Length: 93
Image (cartoon, rainbow, N blue to C red; front, top):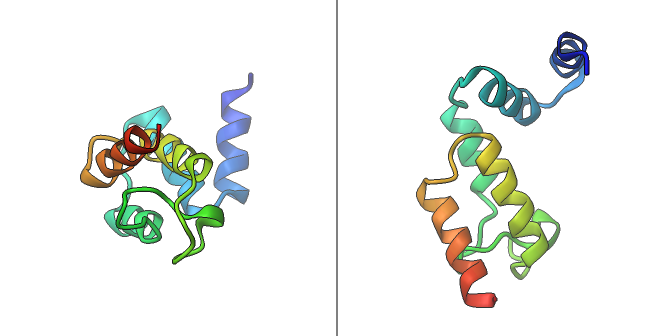
């Protein structure tokens, strides 16, 4: 894999979230707090993330798993939102 080309592609075409994930995974750069807050905003009170990431929709296992993957890639898995999401999965298991 050509990492330099991948980095250039994400820098050129990626969303703010994709760029933050890349910086964290490759360089260990912590993401901007506002970006993380915007990402977790749809999280439901039960800890899950709503189906389609649409605020107010019921929590869904697949959406929550995807959100956990992103939180891990951002390096913020151990924060309260990450732990609430894990709790949701434990309860729904």
